[in-house]
Length: 294
Ligand code: G1P
Image 1 (cartoon, protein in one colour):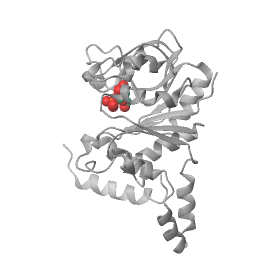
Image 2 (cartoon, helix red, strand yellow):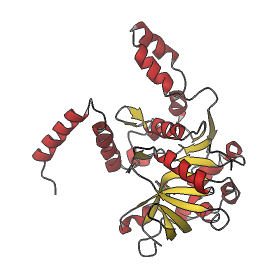
Image 3 (tube, rainbow, N blue to C red):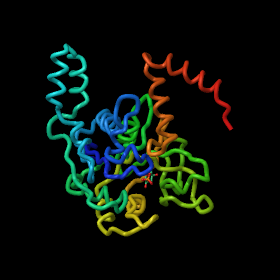
Image 4 (cartoon, rainbow, N blue to C red):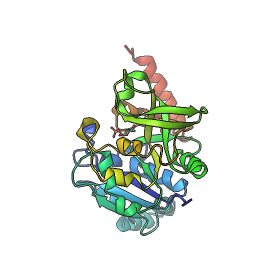
C-alpha cells in the first residue's frame, strides 16, 4: 500500500459568515489565540507524516501563501532586537521549500469541485483532505489517528462524530454498517439530509483520507445538494469498490466557520496554554457571574 504523504487543503471559500472581518482577509488567516487556522491544519497534517501540500486557493487569498514563506524583513528586525527564539519558532512552523503548491479554483462550484482542482497534484496516490474551518483539539492529532487507521484498513476513511438529529442538514451523514464503537463501516453517504430522512446522526468532520479514484467521479461535475459539486456524492460512489470506514476520532472538534464555534475554540485553546489559563479562568468566572443568560 502506498504511504500517505499528500494533503489537499481547500481555502477558496469566501467566509461570508465572518464579514466584515473577511472582506479583505482570508478566513483561513483568522487566528485562534495566536495562530491562523491554516497553520493548525498544516501542522496537524505534518504530525501525521504528510509532507506534500496543495492549497486550493481563490481570489484574495495571497496572505495564506505569504504566511508559509520566509519573512526576511521581519526576521531582520527580530534579529536586531535579539529575538532569536521568535525567529526559530517562525522557521520551525514553515514546511521545507517546495512542500506547498497552490492551484486556483476559479469559480465557487462546491467542495467537490475544489478537490478536483488538485487532481494533477494527487495523481494516483492516496491523499488527505483537511478543511481548515474544522479545528480539532486532541491528544493525538486527528489526522494522525486517521492515518494510522488508514494504514490498517486501506481505502477511504473519514473522521466522524455524532451530532444532534436536528443538525444533520449541515453535514455529510453516514449510513452505518458494522460498528465496533470506534471504526464504522460506511454503507452509504448523504450530503446534508433533512433530519427526517437522515440515515443516522453520524456526521463527517473536515478530515478525510481518500483514494485517487474519487477524482474520476468528481470529473463528471454532477451537481448535488445546494446545486454544488459535492465531495460526499463522489465518495459515495466508491463504497463497495474500496474499503470505506468512518473513524470516531478522539478529541473535540470546533466549527470555526461559525461564530460561536470559533469563539469556543479561542477559549478551549487558550485554556490549554499554561501561561494563559489562570487569567482566562478568572475572566470567564467574572463574566458568568455578571451575566444573566436566557
Ligand atoms: C463540508 C462537507 C460536509 C462535511 C463538512 C464538515 O460541508 O460538504 O459533508 O460534513 O464539510 O465540516 P460545508 O461545511 O462546506 O458546508
